[in-house]
Length: 447
Image (cartoon, rainbow, N blue to C red; front, side):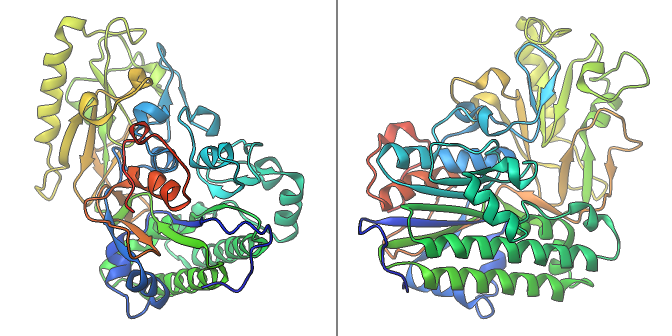
């Protein structure tokens, strides 16, 4: 591998990580004859499916992947988190991630890191070589550091994210065109900075794969109208990854990974509507829109994806469940969730885990009391505006899965059996010969 010589003259081991958000390993493995570049990494190195985290939601997954620790340590549990001692919620950003990021460890070791488009990294850090924040960031000007990076990205029409609203239309052509444009601009930026060859760690994420999966995955799995366009998009992803691999110097190990798997979506499950119908959730008035509108008779409420909180006295402002009843109430709710079935008669939950089983760390005071890992086909929603039915169908036909995330390591000595998302950060540090205390991670190195 490698067309470029190391500009800095340091020939120590380096890593180039490429995230492919939401790509299930089975999608690639079932089409190795078509995705020849990823197939080549699997043949020359190691590849396989890995598990995601609880919950398998991008806002929680990327902090976990880039730190090697669970949400109890990162402090980020999902797209929306709850303030301590309040019903107020917030959307976690980079400053809310309380654990040490992979690139911070590289910087502390004297290395340089280029970090492009990683979700939950806004505002961009200034202790790294260069960074443009990813998912949930505003425009490029505010999301890029240093200014030279922002200028380059602006000049090249860089896009932080696809216009997902286009996917809501029954006609997907405009969405697909937008997805290709976003992918093209991302590749050009990655290629430009790979060619700079002035970094020790390159860490970039293709987010558009997740977007395409949300709106086209069922077309792929069920031979639908847009299956050909879906596979054409992934042919391009594979081609771009192959071109990037060819640009890497000989002392660079390439790693490709997703943050969760994907599967077809059959039903959206409106869990706060279910709680309301079951008598567990009530509101102060009919004009309810937020968590703050629940009343003091509420026993539990939900936040996406599948996170349940007991309305506990002394923890919630209008808590109704006494502390000495907490375990019994939680056990009752867990049993109800385990017995919840969809219109097709299938159980909604693959399993329901307690906070003690899923989370460990200094930030577990905002951890959900229960988290549902759904069976394939059931996409867990929350919402406080109310829904007519517990089960519905929305514009998306693909959903995240806990299983079947993907990992490729261009190193034949790597092992991927029984691996999960927490193993990626220590693996990258090991590949770079960066010293670390193994007890700091929930995962272990795979090399």
